Amino acid sequence: MHSSTRLARIPTRDITIFASLAAILYLSRFGLQWLPGIHPMGLIIASMTLTYRKRALIPLYSYIFLDGILSGFSMWWMPYLYIWLLLWGMFMLLGKIEMPLIVKAPVYMIACGLHGLSFGTLYAPAQALMFGLSFEGMIAWIIAGIPFDVTHGIGNFAFGSLIIPLHLLMKRLSNGQQM
Image 1 (cartoon, rainbow, N blue to C red):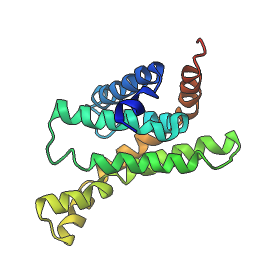
Image 2: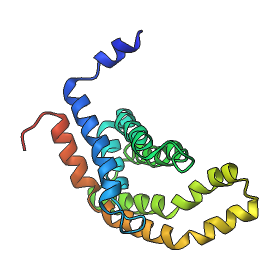
Image 3: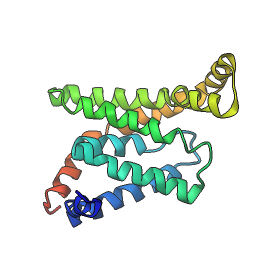
Image 4: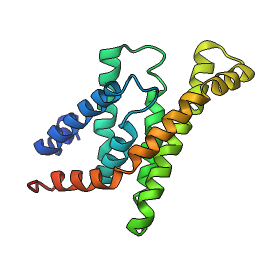
């Protein structure tokens, strides 16, 4: 099957929504840039993963490449190729688990918060490889970043409270329902 045939299977509505989501991800990272590590990206990635499942990779990697194009494909960018994929994978798994709504909300918040809290640790192996850090140097880098990871985790946890409403909104939009 040719790639043009595969692209033809994505409805125009979805292409528009996915392009908009990629742009929103990009803009959301810069909107709160003055607050270290606090942004709604985890919220958006979690919500679009719960809504679009595997197809959420389209806006996710569109965002990652857009970020590289506009901000530069340098070393800071490379870990984005796997760090955001881990959040997507976590919500792919969570989306398969049957839970009452009263349980889903805090579970989603905790998952989103844990991703933010672990961001520096997830980033560290790439930093160590790219900058020739020893294992001890990598651990020191992780420790130095703990204050940023804590604020990132708290921000993600707070934004995580909006995952279910945003997911429901995205579902309605993807089904073509009027608002």
